[in-house]
Amino acid sequence: MRNVWIICRKELGSYFVSPIAYLLLTMFALIFGFFFWNALGVFIIEGMEMQMRGQSFPMNINEQIIRPLLSNASVIGLFFIPMITMRLFAEEKRTGTIELLATSPIRDIEIILGKWLAALMLYCCLLLFTALNFAFLFKYGNPDWKPLLLGYLGLLLQAGAFLAIGTFISTLTKNQIIAGAATFGVELILWVIGWVGEYETALWARVLSYLSVLTHFESFARGVIDSKDLIFYVTVIFLGLFFTARSMESLRWRS
Image (spheres, rainbow, N blue to C red):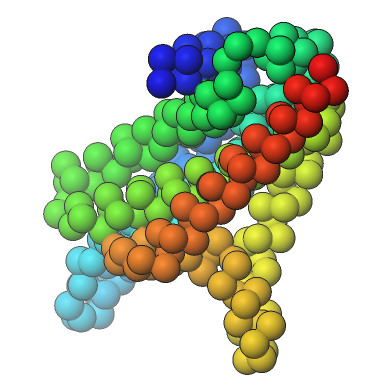
């Protein structure tokens, strides 16, 4: 674990010594902040209109604000995660330092876990900005905190799966743009692949629907933990890191 932590700190530090982390943090905060401001404005306007009509106002902050915002954060992550993972190994290959890693006494799995954890920690930093917005709701409202925590768990599991996929793709090329575009393409396919289940009931459609990451995030957004969703995300993370390890092994042989 010591080597994993060393790699993780080095990789995380490389994000913050360049403009990458600050650009991602700023853009994520602005985009999510707009979504939060818009959702809160709609919530307030609808409440005022219902009161003017003499109707009771159901103050369900979780269903009307938090749950949609968690889904929005998931969509934003779809665009930001490729920018986090595209440099993990592609930059090492471009600068030639991948040979040093491949021939070092550090095990491949330690390198992979260190880089993946660094990417996951950077994504956690992005989520901290969403927590600042939600803190505003807890100060002036009374939302249920348990569904919010489960929603964050879903976001982290989904991000972990996407980051594992992006880490693997980053080992396949030394071009960061290609790595980022390919990662986004795979993420988008896994996002929309379940849409066929809305109009098709055949076995192949149900299989594709199960492979959709969107299908497995919905229960977390509702504040519910389903074992099949946990198993799905953990399996994707394992497979992503496993294929990354095989790719690194091939690099060692070529080195």
